[in-house]
Image (cartoon, rainbow, N blue to C red):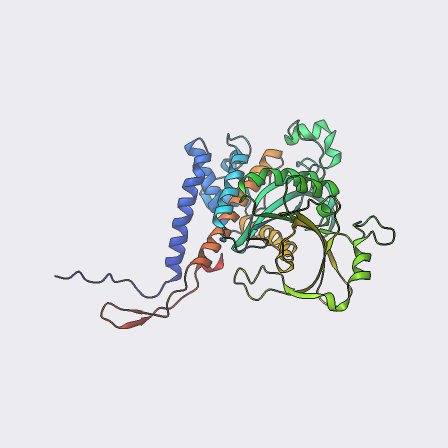
Length: 427
C-alpha cells in the first residue's frame, strides 16, 4: 500500500503566518530568559516584551500590566527598578542578535560590502525636574527647545534592514553638580557631564567589538561630524566614516578656501554633479531609491599613508535639484572606495531615523513612566530588544522565496497558491 500525500492547503492564511510568528517569538523569549536569574523575573520580562509588541494604544506600566493579566503595574515597576538583572548584558545580546539577523552577505556599501553604524539622537518630552537627565534643551524630534530627556542612539544598518543596538542618556551640565537630584534619580557617582560626541564615542567603542571585522562604516549628523575629536577618534580606531558637516566647516588651511560650502561653490561645475541612487529603500525591496545629485572630490591629505591599502579623505556634497540647497559631508576611508559606493554611506543616515520610528511607534520606546537612571535604561533596552525582533523578522520574511503561482497536486493536477498578506508582511 502506498502512503497517501500529505494534505496541505495550497493557501497560506494570515492565521498561519501569525501562528508561525508567535512560535518564533516564544523561541526568542526563551533565549532572552537566560539573562534573568529567577523564574519570576523571566516571566515578567517575557510578559513585558509581549506587551511592547502588542497593539496597545500606550505601553506604560498600567497597560503592560493589563496585557499581562496583572492587577496593577507593580510587577513591571519592580522589573524596571529593584529587580536584579543586568541591562547592559541584555543590550549586548540585542546587538549580537541584530548583527546576525541583518547579515546581508556583504552586499552593503563600501569596498567588499559592509554595514553602517548610524549615530543620532532622540528625545522624549518630560515634565517635572526629577526624571534623570530632564532639562529644558533642544530636541530635534520635538522640533525645538522643550523640557525633555535626550539620548544618543546607534543603529546597525545593512541592505537587509536596520535596528537600534545601543543608547546613552545625555546628562545636562546642570545635573553634574546637583547631588540631590542625582541621588533622587539614582544617577551613578561615576557618571558626570559628557557631551553628545563623547557619548557617541562610547557607543561606538562598545559596539565595535561585536560588529563584523573590517566591514564597518560610521555616519552621523552635524552634531558629531563637526566635532574634530569625534572624527579623530574614528580615525584612531581605523573606522571609515562619512559624517555630515555644516557649510562653514573648515577643510583646507588656505585663506578664502577654508570652508566646505565655499569650496563647493567655487569648484563644483554644473556638469560635475552626478545623479546617483543612494540605496536604502531599493535595497530592502521598498521601491526605487531616490535619486540625488552628488559632487565628490578627494582632499589632499599630507598625513595620509602612501602605498597599497592607503586611506583617503573626501568632500561630499549632495543636492536634490538646482535650488542651491546643499548637504555637506566629510569622508575618510580606503582610497579604493568608488564614488557609487561612497555616497551610500551618508545616505544610510535615514536608517537610524527609521529605527527610532519603529522603536517609538511599534515598541513603546517613548511610553515609559520612570524617573530613575536605571529605570530609563532598562525600559529603553527592552524596547530596543522588541524592535530588534521586528526588524530581524522583517529581514527573514524578505529572504523567504515567493510562493510559486502553481504547484503539482497529489494527483498530478496543478493548483494555484494564493498569497494573502499576514502579520509577517507588516513587520
